[in-house]
Amino acid sequence: VDAMRKDRSEAVYRERFASAGDFTFVFTGSLDEARLRELTERYLAVLPSNGVREEARPVRPPFPAGVVKGSLELGIEPKSEVFLAFGGEASIGDKDYELFDMLIMLIDLRLREVIREELGGSYGVQVSGNLTNYPDPFNTLAIEFGCEPGREEALSAAVMEQLRWLSGEPTPESYLVKLRETFRRGKESGLKNNRYWHSMIVAELMRGRPLDSIMDTEGVLSRVNGETMMRL
Image (tube, rainbow, N blue to C red; front, side, top):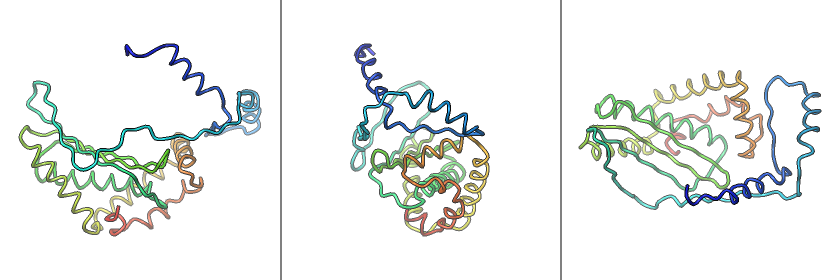
């Protein structure tokens, strides 16, 4: 905070909004197209533009190579938190965004069964991840759970064992059924919601995919099989 400078912050802000020539505006909902066009021409068409189209570049630090371990001791409760992260460059094919989301769901299902129910190691395991092509293809996967002090290494090893199992054998049909049902229900519910449409339109524009892919539920489900999920 001490290093922040008001004049520099204002200069960056003004620089970012000095030209709207490469902005993309997305409107969703029940709209009067004539009225929308009128308002667009009145308020958006007059925004300044210098004719330059900018390209983003990655500024994130490189993901650590190899295995990096660390520990932080704080607090007074007899409780541990374990955090495992994976990431790196990605090769993205057709339907891989949807399949990656299903992979996150699959890992969550499996770890919930093993870590929480079979081993009784944690009340819950949180699995999250992201696959993006902007500004460059990259993926991240994070697994986090709380546990009793002293069980961190054993439970971490159990997580890694399950990840190896998922990547070493075709995914059982029992899991595939859950993945397909969850995806279908989520898609059916989302397509009735303006917020979902808005977020998906923005996402597909960023990905460079046609907008009709938003409704291609069956095309995604046709790719959900044991071998595909294993290769992910």
